[in-house]
Length: 277
Image (cartoon, rainbow, N blue to C red; front, top):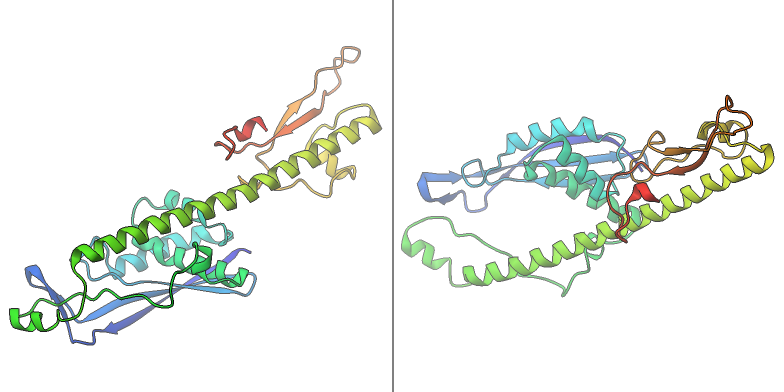
């Protein structure tokens, strides 16, 4: 599955109570929300949203979100939206910081993963507990009596902080587990590709008593259908070929290649380096 387009929609969300006020004379009466649609070549669309509480509340604002998404969108075309770890790495390389900008795209890709797998996102992130949960409700700054009337039912700040801390820990654990699962699948594909290419090189040598000049030679001579894409670098150009020893009886002959390795940087889940595979 590949991303074919990213669309944005601006939506005004008026407050039920008219306005929300906080210190410093700040207030907001309408939330400026941005809904994001991530379209794919599979005909599935994922939906996400970012709705900052005005530029004076947190380091995030609605027009900044839309400007940032417009900046990121062209650089995400053709990317696999289900590879969420790689997708977020691509966004981080393309734009430093601004996590609120990336959150709507990330949310839409989680939606795509749920639709593609037929599972709720809650299940993909570790499962949900219970049938419902309490919502957080902030109280607008007002007169003491008016604010007191709104605190008959609710939670203390300490209770909210404890719950939010637990949710953050569980979400972080789920994300790590998911990313490790994706990486394990990529490593399995890489090991299979390396085995098949090495087997093709051995068959070529057994048939022709010489090594192929390149991986493309294996394709043109019918030993492979095509050069596979490295699942970690997502390109066919990163394979590192190892040249064979020159033939002493024919020093002018091209030695060819007798092995191939991944050109991916980094360390595998087992602690080994990909370049050593």
